[in-house]
Length: 327
Image (cartoon, rainbow, N blue to C red; front, side):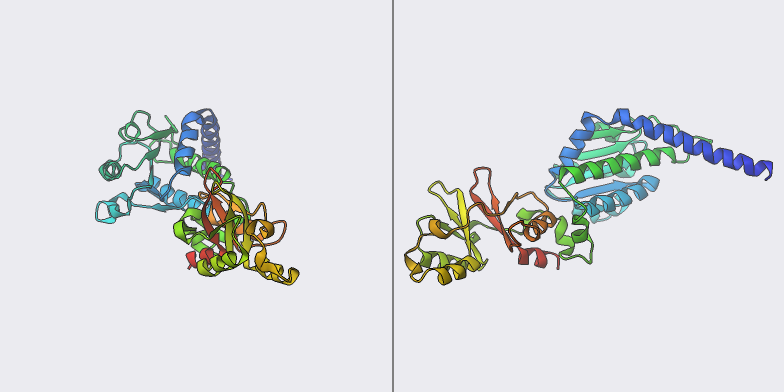
């Protein structure tokens, strides 16, 4: 092996040591700002729009894909495309996530008026503290100052590695924050049971308002069956005098009632309802809801009740809605 080859190996090993040392140094930077970024992204009711220029743009593209595959709907928007019409993708409820080493990219700075006009909060991953983008961000995750692995300290190398690690930290923390499990990847895969709808939230697909089947505990069996038939969800909620969920009655329950009771029409809803029905939070992922339907200990169901903080029925999510949502 010649001298030149040994030098190349030495350089490669130096790059590994340098980047590893600086990645390890990130641990001390993960604190309250990181938690604030995670919470802001977790509360997003629209989509996360990720943007960057050059090498940072390539990383931003990858980060958008990673977020989407782990339950946080995201898309990459190239700032140049945004300035030529694609800025219409920004909308209320979205969160912007910018990746920039300098924090002063003119293309990203030109996007800020669109972001601010819609009141969209901005999370930035930058290497330069107190930069223009950092100053206008709701939350800033600073990765630098950083020494590039390039001998001239110019080519984005270490800085991109650090930004990617921070992006991966966000994706994994959001995965944990949402209770995302390995089984959910099966639903998020394009060939999965419910495709793209898996990463949506329950409240986007649930039946709400007057479409929610609801009877009082004192309702007779005839009223129960009429409510099930009219709302066409195969189920009705049963509520107490305060409007809180007391139980449910499904069309399957109704058939069993007819078989067990020779004279069923005098029965009241409270006498035949299933207490402790399966429920789901409105901001849960559809993937988690489908899993809850399939893995219910007492047997699978086709609908879940969505409750408000006072345990009043807010909506009903049916399995068919999940399947149609992925079409």
